[in-house]
Amino acid sequence: MPIRTRNAEPQRRRRGFTLVELLLVVVVLAILAAIAVPELGGPSERARSSTAAQNVAEIRTRIDIYYHQNGAYPPTLDPGWFADGIPENPYWPDHPTPLWIASGQNLRYPNTKHLSSGSQSTMWYNTANGRFFYRVERGADDAETVALFNRVNRCTITSIGQTK
Image 1 (cartoon, helix red, strand yellow):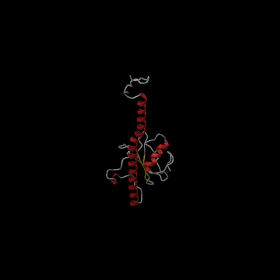
Image 2: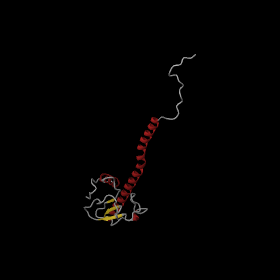
Image 3: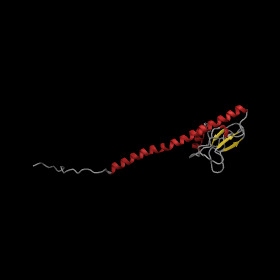
Image 4: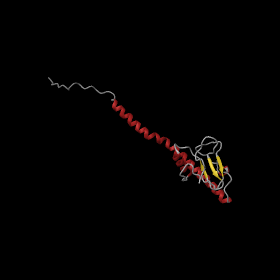
């Protein structure tokens, strides 16, 4: 006759997962999602700011060519300089008033760096000194707006109100 000990009861087969195991899986998935989700939105913003910067560079090149050929900055931007017309600001394609013309030698940057409600334009051009900029989206704060404005327009302004 076999000897039985008190802990020698037949073991039941374990079915399913414990609550702790399920919670651990949920936490790991949440951490992975927190890492992955911001990356999904990032490339489109980087692509848009890169496209805007390339458009700004192309428009500035056309302004410089005009200046070197004519000895003065153009009175406006000519859509004929570009294969498909003046490149749109990718932050506001099809905006009803794309270009604001300014003049004044001392005015180096637009008063408003971002597009706000109303009829403001998405692009700013100063005929007196050939300066050209895209307006950008408003950031969470002024520092974020300035950073995006600098990245798109390849400049180094230090404040949202800087015009010189």
